[in-house]
Length: 306
Ligand SMILES: Nc1ncnc2c1ncn2[C@@H]1O[C@H](COP(=O)(O)OP(=O)(O)O)[C@@H](O)[C@H]1O
Ligand SMILES: [Mg+2]
Image (tube, rainbow, N blue to C red):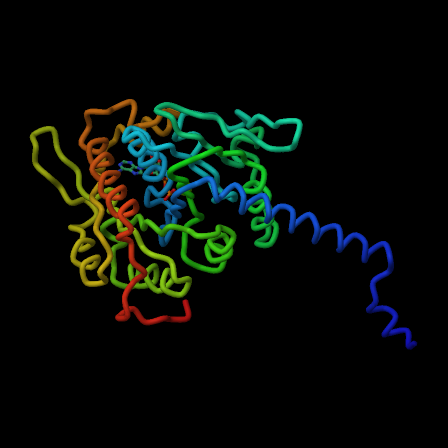
């Protein structure tokens, strides 16, 4: 046998390592599937870019669904920039309880939402996680294999911003995803953004539950309404693509303030317009999801490469 040929072959110990690694991944996948079977609806929350309030919307929507007597969990799949735990009142480094059998118990916050995030495991915020794509995927697979959610009605998955390869890989890890929710702000609501998300969903053959327009307007103390980021064409565009429009969340300085203080806005200001909007959006989602109304975007959405 030539040297070159020999060099390509795995030695017995390497072969064993690869085989063990594959066995471990298979075992994780088996656990992941068993865990996901105990969750009725798995919903991934997407946005085209960061900073549009995806994590804020995901966390407060989880609160609203819990107020509607649903058993809810939130999974932070944005492992490079985990933030959702803080918006739900848990500090970075809070931890997750590990059992002897290796499973992990996600902490539960009022009004009854289970939270799992890499942020709970990091000692401090300033510590960056510099993980390449493949490592991120295996971290997410491992977390989903060992987090014991118990029985849930809804698992909301806070995705990393964008609709590219990373989001695609995460989506494919989760069997029988119920659908996507898209979060946008008015200035971002261009046709191309919605079209990109719709074609992403179509490519994966996954329904879109609807669009939420965050930072839609600002209501002054005198009652007048200001469309700071432009008057959203979200509703019309959603209609054009036959995607349900779920509702608008206003700009409210108390949102940023509550998030900075590490409090869940929804619970701190239950009478605010934004908190009421979350309840209405939750009712729409419950109707669409639980009555099987969510659809894969229709034939008029072209599949583009992006
Ligand atoms: N409707 C809103 N009104 C005021 N501040 C908001 C609103 N939505 C989000 N924010 C603030 O904007 C910032 C970005 O929100 P975040 O949820 O972290 O965005 P993303 O997850 O999309 O990157 C946070 O400081 C948050 O408190
Ligand atoms: Mg975020």
